[in-house]
Length: 144
Image (cartoon, rainbow, N blue to C red; front, side, top):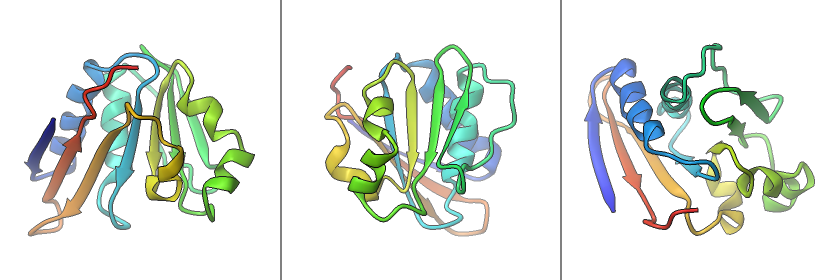
């Protein structure tokens, strides 16, 4: 199933993600794609809100992974600084993507070969003015 949504503000982008989070179960993996500034971290803030996370969500660009407690544990990964899938395996990516929480991965194209079949792929594109985004959600239809 594929869904395309146009959002006109960061709040609308977060709301799309919050609604998605409400339907997810443990073991879900969300791979995020998009240029720098496309709204990947904004989308993850919405996932966190949808899971009941009360902490402020920041991109883990330098730490690689942030963990947030909510209805499901959210593992927020930013792989911008890694070279390839082998480097991701070195820090234990497989433990997260096959775990019981919700794993949300920015710059997922770097680990595409490691992603499980049930991965939900979210592509964010800047569209029109600075706040408008095209959000494409491709759900594999497979439940973990």
